[in-house]
Length: 207
Image 1: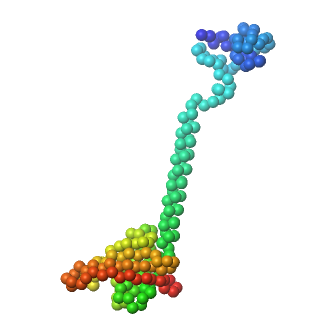
Image 2: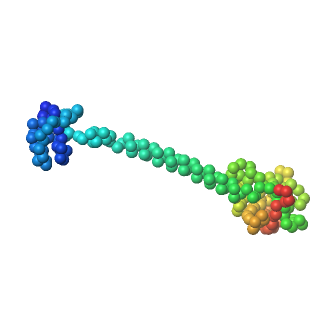
Image 3: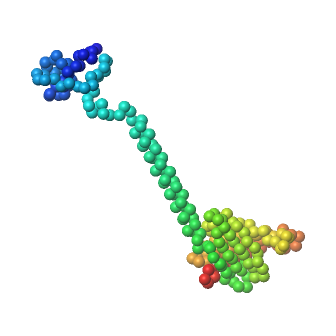
C-alpha cells in the first residue's frame, strides 16, 4: 500500500482528473502528460485509504439524520391532519343536529300522547328532551345521541310510582317535521295492554 509520503504534492490529471503520484510523468489512467507544477491536496489520505474528491468529502457520513428529520415531519403532519379531521367531524355532527334544537308541537292538538317537546343540548354528545302531554309535564331526559334517528327508553311514573316503560323513536319526516313513535309497555298491575302511538311535530313559531 502507498505511504502518506507518496501523496505529498500529488496533482490530478489535467485531462481526466485522476490522482497520480508526484513522481509520475504520465497519467496512470489516460496516459496524458503530467508535466507542469503539481497540485497539492491539503488533506492527504492516511495509509490504506482512497483519496476523496472535495465533493465526496462534503457529503454527510450517513443519511440517518436526514431520515429521522423526515420521519418527524411526517408524524407531525399526520398528527395535525388527525386533529383537523376530528374537529371537522365534530362540527359536522353538531351541524347535522342543530335543526333539532327548539320547541316542537304535535300537529294533532287532540292527541292522547305527547303534545309538546323542548329539545336542547345537554353536552356535546347528549340531547335533552323535555316532554308534555295534554294533561301534565312528563319530565325531562338526556339521551346519548344528537343526530336522528334517536331511540331511547322513557320511564313513565307518577310521583315515585313507575307504571310503564316507553320506547321512543325520533326521526325526521321531511324538512322541519319530526316523527315520534312511542311503544308503551305497562309494568304495573293494571292489566292494560301495550300500545303504539305515532305523532308528527312541527316547530313552534319563534322557536
